[in-house]
Amino acid sequence: MGLLSIFRQRAFWAFFGTGLIVSVAYMDPGNWGASISAGAKFNYDLLWVVWLSSGMAMLFQYLSGKMGLAGHSLAGMVREQVKSRPLLVGYWLLAEAAVLATDLAEYLGIVVALHLLFGIPMLTGAFLAMLDVFLLLLLTRKGIRPLEYAFIVFVSVIGLGYLYEIFLSRPDFAGIALGSVTPTLNAEMALYAVSIIGATVMPHALFVHSWLMQEKARRMRLGPKALPYHLADDVLSLFLAGLVNAAILIMAAAAFYSRGIAVATIDKAYLTLEPLFGRMASVVFGVALLAAGISSSITGTLAGQSIMESLTDFRLSPLLRRIITRVINVVPIVIAILLHAEPLQILVWSQALLSLLLPVPLIPLILFTAKKDIMGTLRNRPLTTAVSALFALIILGFNGYMLYSIARG
Image 1: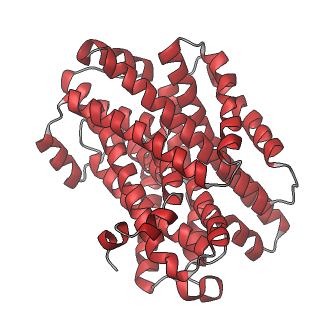
Image 2: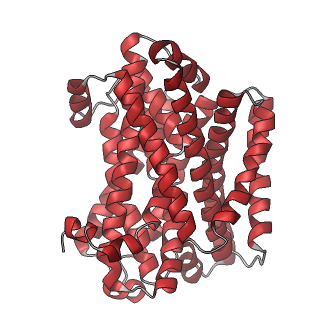
């Protein structure tokens, strides 16, 4: 059954949505920080990393969602397979660290967007940003489906916003084509390349996709026959996310690099767009950033909930669990604001940290989806496992090169 024929089926659109919720993780403010910095600093040279990362993300999210169709969540399966209590606690702490690094970027995106659009002080914005907890509760009051509809709006705002920005910036299409197919990497680019990977193949998204799909499989009584729908959902949603990520880098290269404008802050990117392309360009930038921050923050909260429920014995109400998660996650934001840390650099480094933490969900995901006793008829084919392992090695290679480059100064 081809993808195009699946897209024409009403049953697919009744299924569609889980991949969209996950895809927002790949358009979060961390991606903005990594891609704006890369485009403004290196033109289109790192665009190939965006496409490579998007392809890897598509495969890994497919595996995660497939595990959910088989009736398992990734974190739940880790708990079932790991018998050592200290090892399990250590794993949980590493998984929570990945969620914290993700939330750092998402919160910063909301805070910065509120500051740029409405002049709200950053410290005040840090506490206002916690209100997305209640938005999440409102959207999930009647299940996940209303949340999926809301994410169609979020993704549309982000995508249309950047389509508008690209139209205004008039990029060099020959440069885009060259940057897409010509791998270029040196020590100076290493941090930004790894940040793009960490902002695209995100640890928390690998956890939450299996959990959301497990819930959907139970609710809709899905089984292996739904695999083609999951594949189509995954490909469509993450293809759109890849286009948005590429658009962010392309806009930064066209608007800033081509004009010799050094962009060291998100504020400068926002303020520079207005004299270049008019007030509407900067407003669209800010609104899209706000939509990206809010939507990806909701996905991050769901990921934190899935990890806590699956890896610990904590018994908390959903409201209390989400409030505690939000209070914990707001602390590093407040500290960063009080220390006058630059949000753009925090975003870049937080995404690099996420890339370093990728083996935490990635290794068990590849191992578990290759086992017949776990996956049944949904077990990976040997070629799928081999390609997944190759992608994992590529990510480790990027991480190693970045650490080597930093150590060498």
